[in-house]
Length: 216
Length: 271
Image 1 (cartoon, rainbow over the protein chains, first blue to last red):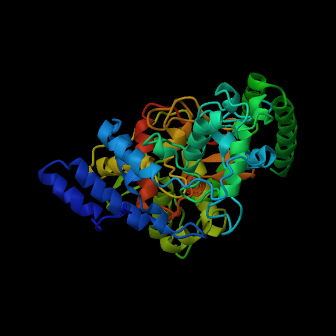
Image 2: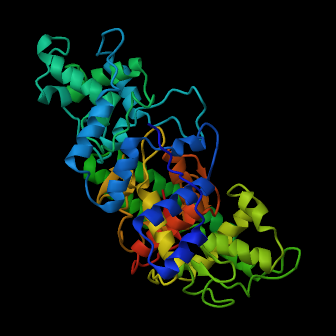
């Protein structure tokens, strides 16, 4: 499944020579890019060069971004189906943790850079892109506002049967955002091991617990 | 010169207090406050100190060959500084590769002064000869202040580097699936309260590629484009791009060509 960004080593000079007789194609530039990637990066701290390996979703979404055209529907659906299969429901059957812990995780943007240590707790990066608690004015806008996330969806008791569908969807979205939007820009917090099950339960509470500041 | 440093630090402290006061207010007031704070900082930019250091280094006889850099060819002929920055990165016949300002300066330090370029490229940012490269880059770039970006795409390697840079810009990877475009692919984007330039097109005068080298108030450091890219990749959770590697040059070409006609405000001052 894992395909590497670095195909065969293809020297830039060779591509340029080829360009003398006919203009290089997009595929030639893809090869040149692979060679440049292979030669340009090095391991540092916990960030090793194996992070440059792209899975199918990243490979296809990156190519679509370069082309400036969205994926065709069939490809998008296939990516979503493959990612949906990775979603693991909570092993203890609990979806909702403590919103106060969730708020701390949402505030933190730490973790997994080469200046972080292995085993350090990762943050969720939520406020970097989303509005959540209205009292926090320092929020980004790359993602939609999540203020009143649960309230707007009519969640009065996240443990009630009536809330099951939205609770499970939200868990799946946090676990692997690409299950519902093939080229979503949101990190796949559960799938990629950014947040563990316990942390996800806390973020779920921040979004869905009626007493959470997000729902005031 | 020392007096200038003291005055500027005091000024920065006052401005920071004002900025913090504004940030505790709501919404737009906070953003206005930050914009005002940045504007005030423009009046006393410590980057001037790095520019002065760079000018001294440019003229000083140094290195094993005891020579100055005054005959360095940055693309517009030996010794021509004005206008060089807004045309870089570009292809250089003598090295047979596309180079940005910082890697080209190292080539000159090697050929004219006898330094070992490889050793400089491996030196951490802010240390030894690498700190000198940053000062030199600040000096050279400042000479093009107010000029407009106009990178060449005439050579095949320059075209290839643009295409490679574009692909790197959109390449998603790492544990967070981030690419450069995750933050810099739309207009009006923000991480927290930090405005993000859209680097897939000309983001405007003095924004993005047209703003580095810049002095960073938060850590009191002068950053060239190489360090700017290095820290972007750190936050992107990627492995480290080697100094002067083709990936960094290709991204420079991509952003520089996109910034065509944008006015350089270098040296800028940043958060």
